[in-house]
Length: 303
Image (tube, rainbow, N blue to C red; front, top):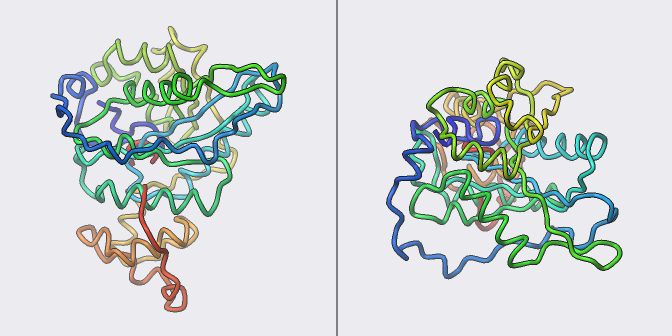
């Protein structure tokens, strides 16, 4: 399964699609209209501060339906962990919303999910970006393929990043995910051995602990890749998920301070999640509704 919760907490939609099945899905010939696609680079750090370290790029795959503060917070927790516990230097972070081919209840269209992620990151972060590549695909893209895409764009097309001495270094791409992802990876039959080795062996993963998940038990069966799995303790427990947000909206409850305000306004403006219930009509103040966010866009991992 592209992990029932694929990369973020609830990042992966819980649709029953095995990685092995996804890999056998027919690819749409040149049916994917990618002519308008441009890899986002606006927040990428082009020059490292410390040349002795290894540049790191964090990628969170997910449904992000809708994106929540926990999705964003996971990147900040990972940044702190990297800063104090590793020899990496973060050069950027990306959310990669899953395509509409990943059919899951409560999944808003890729266009809306991409836009919501863009609104959230543009207004709250100076290092996070949203890559629409996966969302634009007509077919489902396994996590391994998505990471390959980032590796190609950053290290082949861009040639890595520059050090303070003028040299260039290849960037280490890694998956950022919630502990529920590791749990699915340790479950027999959910992920293929080939994909596990590709994701954890070649790229590695930063895993944020999640309430109710036994990380030690999950890691026990992933010993071959233990050196590439970094477990981040969640010092302030937060179990917000997109599923819970949709449930709150269905019950006409407030989701303020759980979801960025501009995203709530976007949900209101576009009447999203009405199939799940009222699209937050009671969660946005009348005065707030006046300044609705304009435009479009997208994570964590296929929430």
